[in-house]
Length: 325
Ligand SMILES: Cc1cc2nc3c(=O)[nH]c(=O)nc-3n(C[C@H](O)[C@H](O)[C@H](O)COP(=O)(O)O)c2cc1C
Image 1: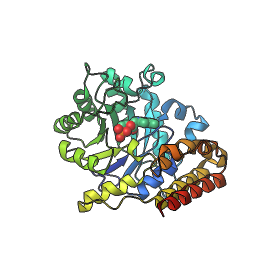
Image 2: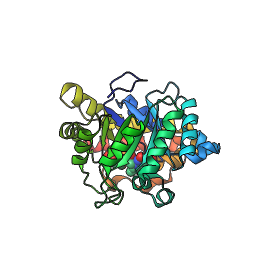
Image 3: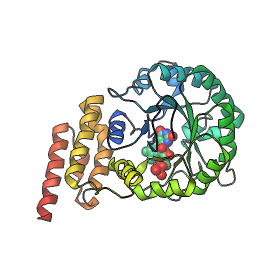
């Protein structure tokens, strides 16, 4: 798919991920081949109230392009006003979160709650697209639960109200993150609307991404959890798409180097203390792809400085290399 303001082919999207898809994650995702990325979900209310922590979430890395800002909320005038703030910060698109299953968000009609109120959803989209010049997309789930699968209706409402594209996470709100994802919903949505459809849910490896495209005819794919500690998946998908074969998987040295680079980028963005706190789960993900869970010791979760992280990773790599020799 091609967005009018970007004029480049977009096939592989990095997902909006709360607590994860910050500037460091997005930089590495795009470095390894993601064509487009999103911020984590940002509160429209927080932006409009000028809350400094929320405004801080709009930071981009130097030279960043091909990036959308995802908003959550449920009040049309607030989302439209927040969209203006996002546009003024130079984002390429705005995405409306219609999939978050978290009670705190849903009880205020936000996230997946919007799937239950299509007149409200239509008003939000129509009000927002009038206020900004950049495209508005929707990220939806298949429906609230198996008895309320309304992704086709939501797609038609979105298209009619002026959404530029739609991403379908092919699970319901009540599915949360169940293993199986209903790719047939993505195929049905692709048949039903004329705007581009991005398929999401259950991509575990590069081959899955290609299968999702082939099975559904979706215009692009979106990767979420398979990229945790593994930005290399974007390179693998792009090579499979372009050449029909997989590049060699990342080796341990590259994994350690990129893990460290990820932490360094976080330090640059958030300062050392906050960055290291934010890094802990991330380090676990990278390390688990290098060695067995049993070999990752408790020290990993007690690291406090960048130097300690570097020391830990170098030691881990040296041990693995010794064992392999
Ligand atoms: C830790 C975590 C945070 C997430 N944060 C967001 C978010 O901020 N906005 C959003 O639309 N979806 C969010 N999601 C959902 C993902 O974007 C994606 O739709 C979902 O994980 C399914 O894709 P997957 O099966 O490839 O992981 C989140 C998922 C996880 C696991």
